[in-house]
Length: 282
Image (cartoon, rainbow, N blue to C red; front, top):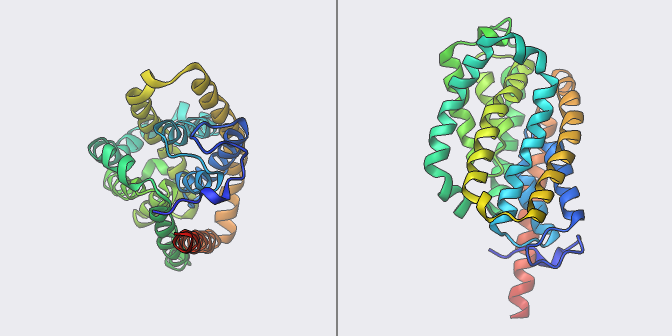
């Protein structure tokens, strides 16, 4: 794979050490994209390429760990529902199980082979096409469930299985679980809210497992960077979540689909162009 080191915009050395500017940029992107169906992890991988950051184990851990900040924004915004509805916890637990099992078994393969810009770009494009089609599938469809508590356990498992697709970087956990919610019978708003809530156990588990495997290798400066990135992600995720529901209800998902296709195509063309430049220099 030809990396995008020629596009270093952060002022970092490209040695893998994150500067505070890198942390701020990645924190903002994580917060804005975690709950949108456009892949926060994919955006951070592509942004890391543009910033010229070396793909170190710490960078991979950072890209996953700051999602905790974004998840805490959902916990805060949905705190009343989480405190009053035990049934929701049951449905979320059932939906969480497939990702917990498959994610544990496939952890090393995912981090070792799938975290690259090519995989992300292709996944963005394919997911974008399906998001455009999703609006057509849901147009004029009658609502089946009156509330999230009414979702069947079979439907919860189905949503969980769809969420497993997001283990491919660039797919988007939000997009995958929203697809699962739609096919389980939820409307756009319900599927989006269930996706928000399902992110809580899923990302807490993914982040906790990742930190458990790497925490002994983190120094004080790296911990500070993780906390800073998480705090920034919290602020921007709070803003994004409040706006996303209204956008989905009024406009649907197709705009996000077009965005994904354009972004994925742009990075594929960019990688091809840089590859040609490198080949000519050789």
